[in-house]
Amino acid sequence: MAAADKRSVGLRGRPERWWAGLLLAVRLCAVAADQTEEYLKREHSLSKPYQGVGSSSSSLWDLMGNVLVTPQYVRLTPDLQSKQGAVWNRMPCYLRDWELQVYFKVHGQGKKNLNGDGFAIWFTKDRMQEGSVFGSKAQFIGLGVFVDTYPNEEKQHEKKRYSAGNQRIFPYVSAMVSNGSLLYDHTRDGRPTELGGCTAMVRNLNHDTFLVIRYVKRRLTIMIDIDGKQEWRDCLDVPGVRLPRGYYFGASAATGDLSDNHDIISLKVYQLSVERTPAEEKMDKEVFIPSVDNMKLPGVDDSDESMSGFTIFLIVFFTLLGVVFAGVILLIVYNKWQERSRKHFY
Image (cartoon, rainbow, N blue to C red; front, side, top):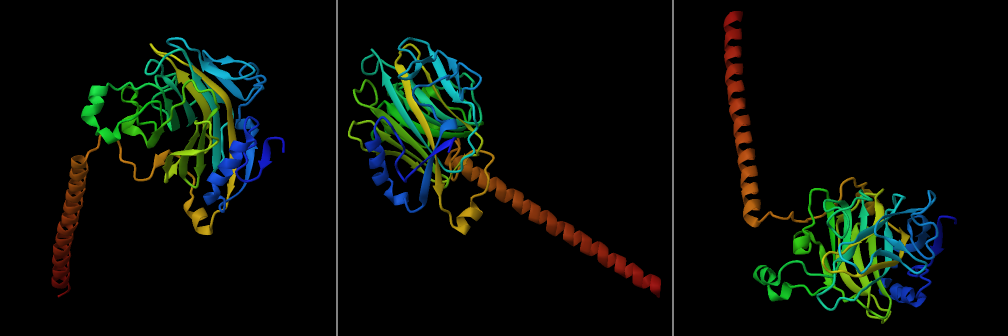
């Protein structure tokens, strides 16, 4: 196939470390019964030697900002202050079930807690739009996965708001789904809108680092392989995630007063052929607005929800009362009309 390479279950064709793909097959044996085949989608993938990336009309990828393309990596930002860059796929992705493998490296001269800011992986409706969230726009539409290397929220405020067991250790990987109305709060490291996440010590490592994003049957799963043991570690698993098709893959990064090199070595997208029962097919309707089942909107507390429920009750109560009152009036008018009709007959 010209546009896609067919692979067996769990083997992703990673030339850098194929045995890690074998371990991923073991790790994902629980879903192997549903998954039949996989295909590398070259039109959505970025890998060495990056021929023509961003420099020709035939390229499948656009570059933005301070990106540097070399034969070994695509550097989103250099280890310098106040830089930002991004790389975006030109082809919208219409896959229903997919997996994105990210082979990356974060490194720089800064010591612990003196580096930043991190990078983001995107699957969004918007593309090539600069902004304050790791070099891209804050009010995006779609999915954002963030590798955040610096805690922006002040520690004393963090201690006041969160229990000790709920404090983060950075670098930290998190995910967010937005319909365009939610704002990623960079000053609070995205806490109010995150779906979940995990600590990921990814800086200045001598071995390869990987991140996998899977979207299968409305389930979003993120795993990381950063310890040099060729083992995948769970980071996030959220059911009921509804992402429209036709969005774009991309990656962006930014530095501020602190900096790092943010390198993308490869982005590989695989189509997952997953069996569905007739009932699952019936429930799997086309999605047009990104959402997450049972996700509580930020800024809405229990008292607000209770008040909303009480307001709905009052609306329903007075609506029913109005219907009953109108029915009584109509009944009285009807009886008067019948009485007049009988008098006229006699």
